[in-house]
Amino acid sequence: MPNTRYRKGSLYAADMAMYSRQMAADNSREVSRLKRNLIRCLREDVTEKQRQMILMYYAEGKNMREIGEQIGIDKSSVSRTIKRGERRLQRCLRYGAEAYLRSMDDL
Image 1 (cartoon, rainbow, N blue to C red):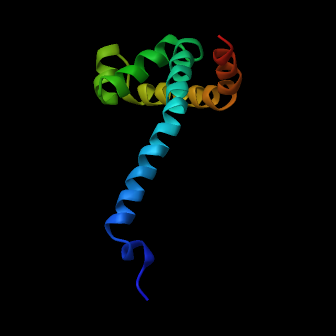
Image 2 (cartoon, rainbow, N blue to C red; image 1 turned 45 degrees about the vertical axis):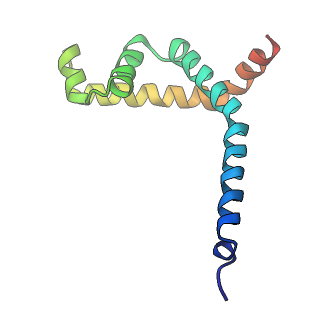
């Protein structure tokens, strides 16, 4: 018995393309909210040192050795600082996001 996904051929592909577009449109608002909350968390919930290293690592694409050389610390310290900052961001996004996002909707 053939797989029904492939039996429909181009009609199935067109349906899936339409479904994908609809689903992408549905979550664009959520992605936008997540970005706003991430920016807020970066500003308010991580230390200046953590923010600096996280931005150098993710935004500038530097590796931990390069960050350590630029700041003047060991790369293991850079790694620990980034991991601590990431944990703070995760907590903020997990627990603080709902209240913050509700307050943004009220504006």
